[in-house]
Image (cartoon, rainbow, N blue to C red):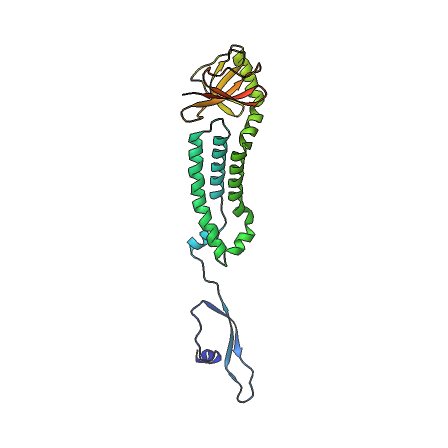
Amino acid sequence: MREVADAFGGRTLPPVPIRVVAAGRRPRMPSGAFGGGALVCRVVTEPVPLSPLTRVLIGPPGWVLLPVVGVAAVALLHAVSVPGGDLIWGFFGSVVAFCAVVVWAPRFVVALLRSDGRPGLRRHWVRWAAAPVMGVAVVASAYSGLAGDVRFALSESGLEAYAREVAAGGETGWDERSWVGLYPLERAEPLENGGARFVVSDTGFLNRYGFAWSPKGPPEEGTGGGYEHIRGPWYVWEEEW
């Protein structure tokens, strides 16, 4: 050990794990040369093992966090794509989304600030970007109304067939709940002008919301609520509390 210390000019090695990969004696040097005949070794420092918590913090989102974000996105899209909104699913989706942000954001910051975390950001950038991309898509769909437009367009043919059945005197009821298209309907009733209207389940807070199909013109105001035109014979029906 004294010879190793002499080779480093009397300095001690730092307290890091080391591995000697080559050792031997230096060739004989001329008289007066530094370290003539001293033991020479090449030292390679081993990386310090990371703690389990650090590995989790700098690791990319896994197969738990990303599905949780997906659940929050689906819940929020459902909540904003029904007339009047769905408060229950909206609250559930907001809580899940908040928890996902609380987990994702600190991990991203730690990985960004640590030199051993930034390579993982570049290597797993798709997994890191998936959560914020889904969040931006949900927010953009909600503010633009795209989620509601797409859902209604996919359900329009089924809703019209059901509305024609109700207008022709089909069965209606307060307690019935069935899916028509992509909407859970709770109650339907015919209109005086030959159309029909129905309530979408779990919408609104005090007032209830649904759709009205009125091919002969706007429904009469004051007959159980107000109406807002969507397109063609379709209207959003707000049933007053």
